[in-house]
Amino acid sequence: MSKDLGKNYIDHSDKISALGDKPRKFVDGLVPIAASTAIAIFVGVGTLAFSLPQVAQAQNANYGVEITPKWNDKGELLQPTEFRALWVYLGSPFTPNALNNGKAGFPEYHNVYVQPSAFKEFRKSGKWPEGTMMLKELQLVDQPKGDEADGSRYEVSGRGYFPGAVNGMDVAVKDSSRFSETKNWGYFNFGHHAPPYAKSAAAAPAAACAQCHIDNAGEDMVFDKFYKPILTPLPLPE
Ligand code: HEC
Image (tube, rainbow, N blue to C red; front, side, top):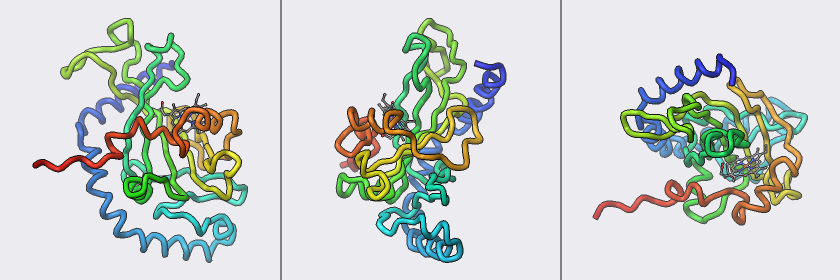
C-alpha cells in the first residue's frame, strides 16, 4: 500500500463516521422522488437520443429502468454517475486481506447499488428487468494493519473493521440483446484504484467475470442471497 493511500484512509473514515447512518435514510427518502420523476427522465433521454445519433443508436427500447445504461459508439458502457445519491444501496459483502492470507482478490467492502426502478421490480416479481445495472464500488478497510493479527482494530463501538477510502468500480448490466452469450449480463471494470474511475469501459471477457457468476450466482447471475435483508420488505410494527 502506498503512503498516499494511507492518508486517504484517514480522510475518508472521518467523513464516514461524521455521517453516521445517514446515507441509508437519505437513499430511502430519494427513492419515491426518483420513481415519480421516471417519466420526465425517460422523455429527457429520448430527446437526447434524437439530437445525438450515436447515442440514439446505442439505446435499447426494451430497458425497463428509469436510469438506463448509456453506451458510446464503440459499444462501451459509460460510467454511471450519481449512484451514491440516487440509487438503492443493497449492502456490502466484505473480504479483508487480513482474513485471506494477506491477498484477497478484492480486499475491500463491496458496496453494491442498483437503480430504484430495478429494485422495485425485483421486489414485485423477483426478476431483474432489462437495463438493470448492479454497481459495486470497492472500499478499502480503514487502517488495514489493524491492532490485532486478523487486521481488526478498536473503535468506541468495539473491535472490528471500519470502512476507509474507495478503491474501484465494477458494473454488471442486464441486456439480453447485447449479452445473450453470457446469460444476458455484461461485466465492466472501471478501474481497481482510487477515483477518478474510467469514463467508459468495454465488456470484460467471459472468463474474467461472467463465468464465475454463471457458475456460482443465482439463476439471474446476481448474488441475491447477500442482499436479502434489503431486498425483503421490512415487517411493519404491530
Ligand atoms: C471468482 C468469482 C468472481 C469473479 C471472477 C467475478 N465476480 Fe463479481 N461477484 C462475485 C461474488 C461472490 C459476488 C457477491 C459477493 C461479493 O461481492 O463478494 C460478486 C458480486 C458482483 C457484483 C455485485 C452484484 C452481484 O452480482 O452480486 C458486481 C457488479 C460484480 N460482481 C461484477 C464483477 C465484474 C465486473 C467482474 C470482472 C471484472 C467480476 N464481478 C468477477 C464473484 C465473482
